[in-house]
Length: 341
Image 1 (cartoon, rainbow, N blue to C red):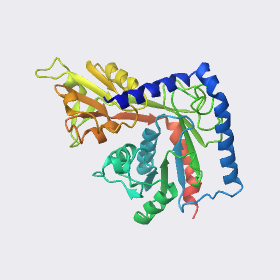
Image 2 (tube, rainbow, N blue to C red):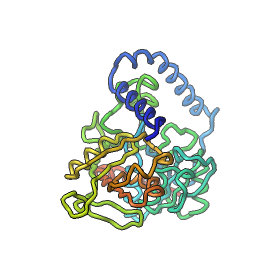
Image 3 (cartoon, helix red, strand yellow):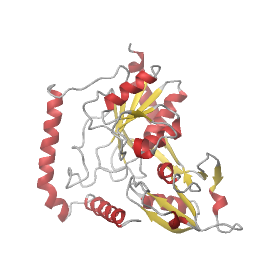
Image 4 (cartoon, rainbow, N blue to C red):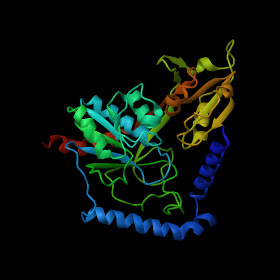
């Protein structure tokens, strides 16, 4: 791991720790958070009175996002909803800003798309769901391009974007993990992008211990890993007890890498080494020599980037299942939207 990545990871951990409680750093930054809150409120007000314009797509739009900085499991929620709507025969498309991508244009995401052009999460959504996925700085532009290319699309899901007020949304799903709202302060004194509570059609908790009421989801790692060619291997076949087995190295560039490592150990895997990297790490500066002599396992999100450097890496999928009541409520909210001309 490079010095830059090490510093970014250390900063990320420092802020996450500071944002969990009302400590000295939080109080020192509290005056700045008041300014942030005033600017955010002014921006919302300008949209409300019409000085800033909101653009509406001709099909229902569901925004899946959060009010807390950092990963809370939005992308697994998007993929779960895509699969649920597909099972009901509904044609779904996904739009995203494509966080971390180098390109700035509007483009469709394909399986062979370069990650630096589309972003890791859109690439993962495409691979996992086969739904049409478009990325652009303007979600409205991405949605318009998607509907032009796929006019049969009935619903558009927006991966992230609760605060992207220039796009009209018909439903909002707010996602939380076990952090809840942290210390309750706005940025930079706390993790909140906007004040909570706020209105939302659905609240979904992706963690094991929800901080407040809302629907819940079960999260578990699959007992199989996926190779770059799509073939699978059982995790039980990676144990050192087998002949010629290599020691395991777990790599994670997600919001909470230690959680991924713990889930692997809970499945009985003995990890000889773990490498925690900053969220959305691109692996460009990583050396292939780091992985020599190991069986490397990683998350699906990391695999779409790591496979270009290390084709032998194994991705362990996250099996994410919202409770049935969540989908029942979603279906009830969607029904009148789909019935409207």
